[in-house]
Image 1: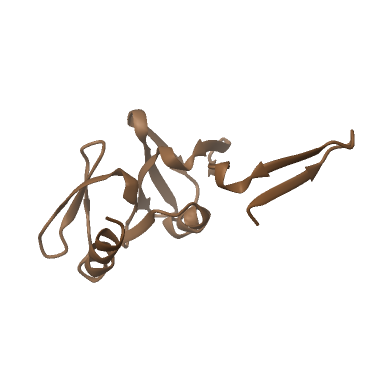
Image 2: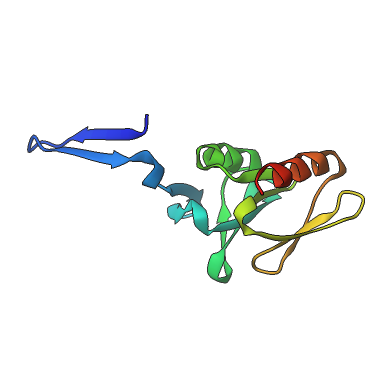
Length: 130
């Protein structure tokens, strides 16, 4: 599974390491936008749409519910559902602030709420990955 083999019409075989493939197609109103999974800071649910906040102060509106975006990102690792409305890229978390559920401060300075029932999952993930 670590290598993807493709045979072209010319008979040449191309080998690509799947770990290097970090682009994913995000459906939007115009079609699809290809983005690098590492560029995602966090995602926020908005009804049948998801707002995806990217590095460089970019924002993309996807025509999928947050659960659908979460499914697209499962193979990339490091993405955590910390609230019914939020999915974060753990690599972009700068700080955790205590509270009922608390919140995380992301690399772009935005604060994302952690739900009470997801707090333990987040704290466990932090402890296991540092």
